[in-house]
Length: 470
Image 1 (cartoon, rainbow, N blue to C red):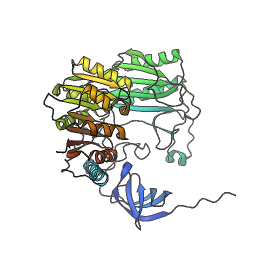
Image 2 (image 1 turned 135 degrees about the vertical axis):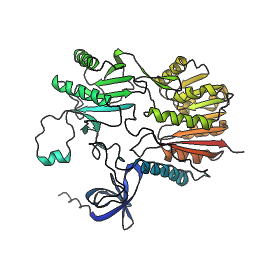
Image 3 (image 1 turned 180 degrees about the vertical axis):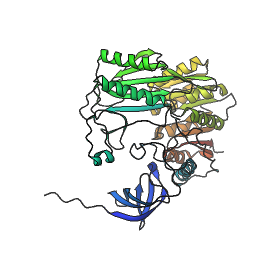
């Protein structure tokens, strides 16, 4: 006989006191911490525990008794269900304060090194429609909200296109509009969805892994250029051509219209051929007169305006005079490398993704930049003592690793090569702080500049300048 599951508690009239990691709010009951999504400091609410651990719990607001005076009305109708933009109900200035605190806490608690005064965070000029890239998933079993299920409404059409529900790979919330990208993105997505319904195209079944319409990526750049990449689960040339012909006719302003046939068990397209339907195979973004080509598999910072602010900070911290050899680690498509190249003697970029390195080389070529050199491969395998001996000891290193931070082998090579300055760009202050603690053997932190790239989320970029100790 199965053991009856223990009922988790409901705590009444609990005050939410702060915000925490992953965009959650914090409540305390008898020194016991409860993490609550979509709460605001100052809320008084009944909180139902959903999951209980030894030292903390996760819960949700069951009943709001007195909302915080801090709250503001979220713009998005999908707020609270979508899972993105968890801070829409908090004023932007308050968001910035908490991101500043997140950076400070990580450096003080994890790095535990001597720190200068941390500069005030650079807020985003645009807090809506700031993303240049959005990705959507088609599903034949779209998520139904609690309101829809409680109403008893019979929903016969379950086709949808939108975002995955947090923590559930097979559940997709149908999105009417998203305020994070230019509205043309909504129009393109809704047109393809409606075309699919009217023409009997199957929407993807995420469990059986069958169906025609699968995923959609849309890039909208400040140059006005637009890239659309549709991923389909069936190699049906006639259906693909008819659909994309209709998209081209409806949206002639699309610069690059492409598609992928993906019959794999996952949505990644990095190892698949991207086929051109019409237009160019790339789009271009502009920064200080430089043109950056972006392909369907390229990484480019998703907030173009703030990327410029971020790169200016990195360049200022590098303090280049024109005589330096610069290593740009995790260079991606060489955006930072090409951005600083005019101020350096030479820039060497290293990146794991070979397609990105080809883009980096193209970006140098189209901008007439001749003092860059790029290498593809796993950072810990490429950046070795032998590599340094062959290509020269760097005067400056710019590092922009993924969220996991740098491998210990990479840190060791950096310490052994001993560049005069390291500019560390990070999307994860916690792993950045861990790496700074490792670099503390030879380096001192001289400047810290947080940059907000993603308004209404808890994510924050941070740039740290380290200098070789005397």
